[in-house]
Length: 158
Image (cartoon, rainbow, N blue to C red; front, side):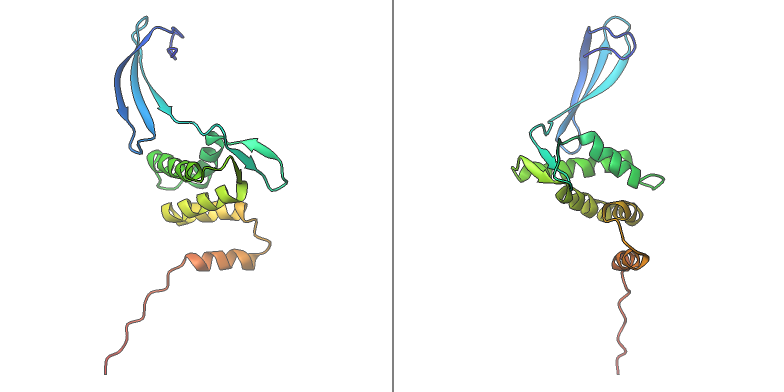
């Protein structure tokens, strides 16, 4: 691993620990040349998954693309980076559990939708407005109505 400060490849690991989701290892490193300390993360990469797009084209799975889409949906919302990372890791875990080498982009979109719906309703609506590409205001309103929980009416006892 190269030092981000002086680019020396002489670095040593000071500390290693599992990240909360147990799918990554956090390592504290120190450059032996300039003594700069920095953090790296090591995680299992989903390399063999191809994403089948709507138009039929295929592209390799890219964690950063998934992460950036979720970050855009969560922009200016009270959601921590840790919560976003956990959502991405959960989605990856579900993809890996399918044991499929090719996955429809729609399947990933559905996983992201479900994850965002639990995480933050506004982020979900932002994502859904792009992902579901609503044709008109009525379909958008229907999606909003589905998010609103109606309070239970209390029965009157006689």
